Length: 477
Ligand code: NAD
Image (cartoon, rainbow, N blue to C red; front, side):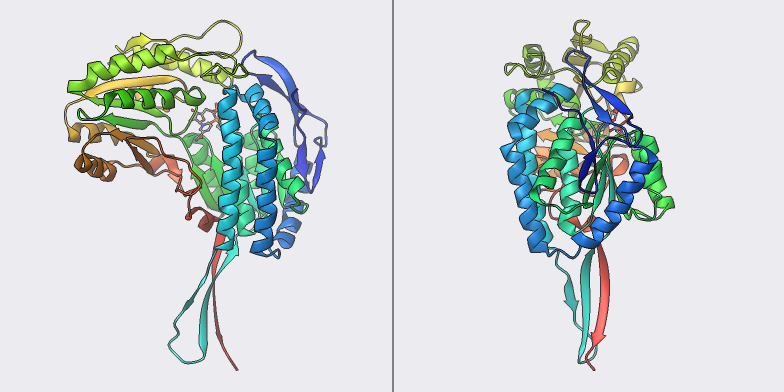
């Protein structure tokens, strides 16, 4: 049922040079289901040499031909969606329906970015003298090193691989060791579509060792990382030291502001569904529900009712709405956050405990009255815990929303067009979604500000980070 996962270097699948492997666990049982190959330094050297050669080949392939190969990769992904989703649920825990959706959305992302590659236009700048042509040309930045996490094993990797390929770059991707199988199937979809050897390479290992080796390496010209703010800051520092371009998709602590004039039923339903999606292990997960005083109690009751109704279990069961957390570290983190919040005066309204003693299940949890100095009010919970607090007026809500150094996603609910416009402008955040949850589509920007990082891996902005701008001026002789 679960494949052993290999490295993919220079067009071939292989074990690491020393034959070492890392076990892969099913978070629903905490039992091993397979193993992933562990790269040695010599494997990284092979990947670097392959990426250097792959770049020379791929940059000469026309944008139109790159597009055709990428569209085939998207079709491969769609055709294999069911099998890949089953691999993902076994290794990551999310319900099968969410895994399927992620794989199918991967196809849409490849389509979008493949098309963007064909639109990587330059321009001609009018000259000051006759006969001079001033050309602005977009060129691929070069071999990319990308680091992708376990919460969306396909979605995070597909953005980086597709952007690199669309721009004409090669890429070495360090996939997630906890959830390597579905990420490897994504790479297989590209390989089977005819991407030449060396253009896409996949490695696994000890994340810090791989990044410290790849980022400074002269072959690598660009870094892209999705993960925690702490690791992102470290990698951005390394990228800066070695003058590498970098895109950082980091953590968030999304505020969701519910004004008194909002549709409270819709707000409670949508926010709870989005809170517990992927067991809250989502960088844009709504975390601080800020609710205007007159509707606070009514929102709280409805949100808690939805929370209690969430069906938790093994994601392979089609009836399940929330699976286990992805690994033991998250369960320990949730226990620590809840204990700290309660000890500081927070009220546990529902949930708050690990479920059973097999696998990494945690109850969907609601906390209220949590003081600002509690850890969970400041650190990204990255789990199924909702914080609900009342606010008096617009300024109070904005002050709390902007209090943290994060700025990834924010949500608001109101029936007033005036309030919607004002909140959209007042919140310090890369993305604001009002009265619905409409983030992360291929054609819209995706990225944060402040400690949530920089750069966008969605929309028409995204490909820019994988391109250099070259200026050529010429005169006919
Ligand atoms: P972590 O910070 O150790 O790891 C997060 C991710 O970064 C993992 O994929 C890991 O493999 C990678 N990583 C860690 N150190 C690295 C290094 N030195 N070089 C390269 N990659 C490195 O934490 P974790 O326990 O795996 O996850 C918990 C935290 O990570 C969460 O609290 C959340 O904030 C964050 N996270 C964010 C996202 C996101 O989508 N932004 C995804 C996964 C995890």
